[in-house]
Image (cartoon, rainbow, N blue to C red; front, top):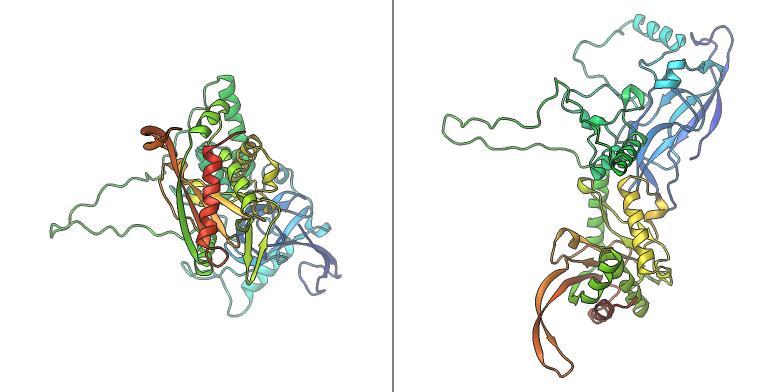
Length: 471
C-alpha cells in the first residue's frame, strides 16, 4: 500500500496551536493498487474514527474491488486526523482515504486503546475550543432536534450500534462471506475490534478452534442465548382486510452488494460485447467414474485435465479477444467459477494449469475454493484467465447456457453426472441398452472469434478424452 508523509503548518491564530506555529506530520492512507487491471475501489467499512489511535499495520478500513475484498493497514502509528471517503464511495487507486497524525501533537495512546480499542472518540483541546467558538458565533448553534445532519467527506462515518435485530448489517462483507461459507453463527464469535466488532481474524480463529475441537472429539460450544430485545425474523401473517381480500405482499427491498453489482455489470457487458452461441454434447463418464472413486476426487479435476488437452488440440479456444485483436495463448490459465452463496461468485485462475496432473489440479481447485470463501484471494489469483469452467452440475442442473468471461472467447459448463439408459454397441456392432453415468457438456463460445465447426470439434475432442480417460 502506498502512503504519503507531509508536514502541515498550523496557523498561529489556531486556538489549538498555542502562541507559536507548529508543524504537524500527516501520513496519507491511500487506496492501494490491487493489480494492474484494477483502477478503483469501494470503501465498505471503517475500523477507526477521527481521533482514534491506530497502530502501524493495523487494519484501518476495508475496501472492495471488482475482483476481491481487502483490508487496508495503517502505514504508521498515530491518531486518525481526517477521514476523507465515506462508506460505499468508489474512488480511484491512489486517492487519499484518510490521514494519520504521527507527531507529538497526536499524543500517545491510553493503555486501554492499545488493548481493546477506544470506547469514546477522543478530541484534542484545540478541536474542543474550535467547536466552542463555532457555537458562540452569531447565527450558529446546535441543529434542532430531528434535523438532518450532513455527513461531509471529511467527517467520520457513523459507527453507532445497529438497532436490535439488525446486527448483521454491521458485519463487513468479508466477515459475512466467511461466516456463511463456514456455517458460523456470528453471534457466537467474540469480537476483538472496536466496540467488540467481529473481524475477519476473529471468524477464522473461531473456525480453526471449532475444527480442532471436532478433530479431538470435544463437544461443540454451546450456542449463546439471543439477546432478550432481539426481534424475531418471523412475523405473524397479516389478518384479512374488511373486504375479505388478503393484503398484497409488497416485500422488502435491499441494495445490491458491491460484488453483486460488479457481477451484473460484467455479465451485461459480456452479453452486449460477445456474439454468444451455445453447443452441447453428452459424454459417458464411466472411465472417469472408476478413476474418481479410486482416488476419492470429484469429477471437476478430471474434466479440467481433459479440457486442457482439448485446448492444446484446438488453441483457438484458449484465446482472448479485445477490440480487433485476437490473442492465442501458449499457457492454459484455467478459471474455475466458485459460488460464494448469496454473495455471488468469483473465478480464481489456475495459472499454467497445463503443467499439472489431475491430482495437482484437484489440490489447486480445493485450495482456491477455500481461500475464495475465506476472502483471502489476491488480485493476481483472479486475473489472467484464458478459459473458464463452471460447474453448476454439482447442484444437480442438467443444462445451462453460461455467459462468457470477458475477454475470453469460450466457457465450458459441466452439468450433473446422472445415470441414464443409453444405447451401446459391442465390437460386433450389436446394440444393447446399458445404464451409464452421463453428463451434458455445454460450451458457450463467441461467434466473433469462432465458428460452429471449431466449437463442435473442441467438444468432440473433449468427449473423446473423457470417455477414454487414462491417467
